[in-house]
Length: 94
Image (tube, rainbow, N blue to C red):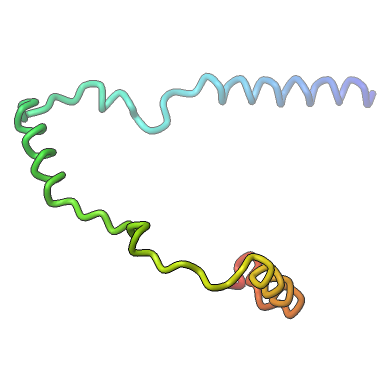
C-alpha cells in the first residue's frame, strides 16, 4: 500500500512540476518585442556622446592614492583580535 501511495505522490509532483514548466512568460517580454522607437539612431548616438563628455569618473587615481603604512601581518593580527572580541558583524546584526 505504501508503495502505491508513494508512486502516486511522485506522479502528482511530477505532473505539477510539468505544468509549471509549461507556464507562459512571467514578465511579458513580448511587450519589448513590439516596441517601436520614435527617435532616430543618430539622435540616440548624439545624446550618448554628450553624456560621455559630462561623465565624471570618481575612481581614485593610483598616483594620488596614499600608500599604506600598515603591513599585512599587523592587519591580520587586528582581524583575529576583532573576531575573538566579536567586533565583526555577522549576518543581519550590522
